[in-house]
Image 1 (cartoon, rainbow, N blue to C red):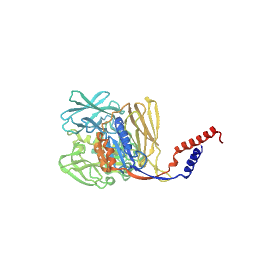
Image 2 (image 1 turned 180 degrees about the horizontal axis):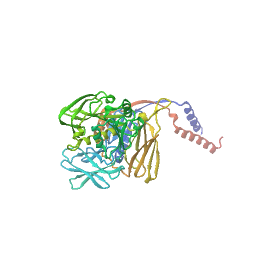
Image 3 (image 1 turned 90 degrees about the horizontal axis):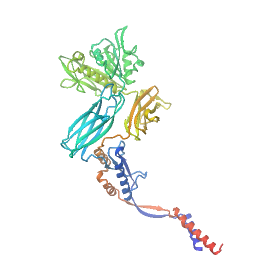
Length: 582
């Protein structure tokens, strides 16, 4: 048939000419939908997110299409770590902050603990609608309660924090459970639990007690450290120009290379330091990140006074000893005082008198810290009361040694993780450990491995340069329960960190309504609770109405035109074969 032939020819000619038509249609701007929830509570928020995506697409919004969005929908139960506020955010709260009950909302411990020291677990709970009821908070190790606290709820909502202490039998990291039990109205117990890992014991601080001259104050400071688990003490005492007393493993002289073996130097008789010794201590603090404590017996003089910065000293002698109170509430007594007028950069460690005059302070210098005490004769009253003198120096020196930046610092987040969840690893090298590359940038080589003997695991963890010089980050996922040892090395530096993996790690109940509402308000968006999530679609449809858009289309570019073209040719060929035409 001639008609089929001409139809095929017409389709071919139209395809060659490629005509363009202008059509008008309604279009809404693109939207992004994000989900940020705790892994243990991801199922329900994910369902809400998928439902919102379907409704937004039905309303005509392009969702998660890769284009720059005009708005963002955040389905979350906590404030995400990174949340750009360049467009309005509609936040949907998936936390359970408004539902009746008692929840553990936050649990944290210190990153490390001294040998023989108990671990402190700080727990925060929130209660809604349980006025008059009593909650019992327990810290459990292997199912046995090792610490408890109780609280009667008086308001709704109400928050309560408690500190639980426990010294694990092992120096390694230990997994414990924080559990809250509440007397419910029906007589049963309502439980909430969070798993947490207590940090491993750190090595003792290596302390060098260096007496430039014989000094009563420094001798009794040294005695307060002897035999204490957090410290390993060495003594170098210069009694005369050619005479020295040594104990432990001190260096032969006070030199920069020898001080690298110590974390803290306690200096007695500092006014007798030579210019060379002052320079060595200055370099130890500023460049090597060490801590130095000057135990004065009189007003600062000599070269070491310049290390104290812009400090004005006033001598004060009282007829009777007065209380000198530390920031932690420890009290020692003294009658001969050096009252400091330190700069605003100094941290006050102890004060006296009604005006809280500073007597002891610390100052940062480079990567390290310097401690100075002006309670000159506090050693005389060390036996009074609870011996605040010894406890003050133990706490102050441990805090100073722990506060300085280590040469290689390694952090993992979280230290307790569920199987298959990522562990973020961050290694930070101090600036003194970096070397300049050919291009002038500061660089270093860092490597990491994870070893799990019980799980037959020995894996390399890739660490990549991050936000600044000397910062390296990476991720690793455990695939079996147990204890893993993460080892990070850089040259001769080596740090080891424990990571504990559980089949299921119970997390705190995140209460993020206030944070989410703040994000929504700051971005110009809106906030909805989980039971009002469906209102987001109508609110966004009202905020971003569909607009007519003129669009140029090329109908002949559709691949479906191949079907009628081929069909017309086949019918033409079949008709010819049937009628014997050529």
